[in-house]
Image 1 (cartoon, rainbow, N blue to C red):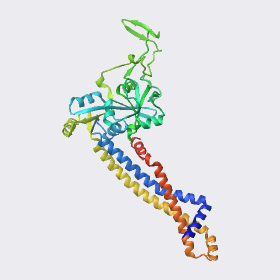
Image 2: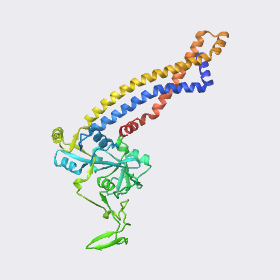
Image 3: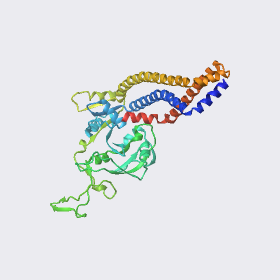
Image 4: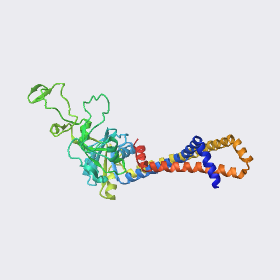
Length: 390
């Protein structure tokens, strides 16, 4: 067989273009179903692990899936927000720890997550560099967010405007980055974390003003009330010089949050707390993320079975096309085979040479698939998170 492999390799090298097409075709036939299966398994692992680590979640009554995806993966599908009253209700129950989350805005296309310091302890998030949140207007970046934005401690990050013409008078906020989190392999790596108050400033519930009198922008001063002219602007960056001018309007218990992570003391406390949200007329609901994920995974499994069937059909068709290409190639080589026969080459030797060609092409395709999987294997988790949150 050494002679057959020598001749086969020489032929494949001579017809490099045709060989490359066959290798790529076979590699794609093998790579697509394997990569799809790996991504689905990574998505299942991500969904299950994050859901199991989150006992309960409180949010507005509606889609439990939207609530879970927004609260766990900061997805763009925003549930109807609840108010801080929902957070206070969990605390007042004396059954669980309440961690509010507000996910509505983005910065550099990364989700801005407003929360409390309890969230960092709950998720076990550690700083890779810099420090944590301390004052209004500061932000901490997840590992992937810092890499994508190419930012570090001391840099500035501006939130993305929701629309071109903001009629509410709120402006994008320029935030000071104070630290970067260590990689966790979860959705936290993609987030820009801020304090809840900072998120409400982005919302427009809190703002600061120029010193109207010192800046000569006052129209009139009557009975202590100052009326400013049109030159009055709101700060887009919170600094030590203007932080004292920032204030909030309305009652704090009415400020919005997307969801509330509830961490019960024990199983009994969890059961009692869930029972308090069973009334259908209640404006809020409580969900068990693990149960929601199991329903989602059941749907994914059904989709994967359909995909497997599609891959079998498409793969079979592709293999038929490759076989046809090989057959036509043999037809084109009829004169070559006839010449080899006249020179005394046995038909079995010609068959061994053709089999060696097919073996080498298949081996090259498998090697290419292995290289592609090796290069993308560490990114499967990132791709799974991207698919989950998109």
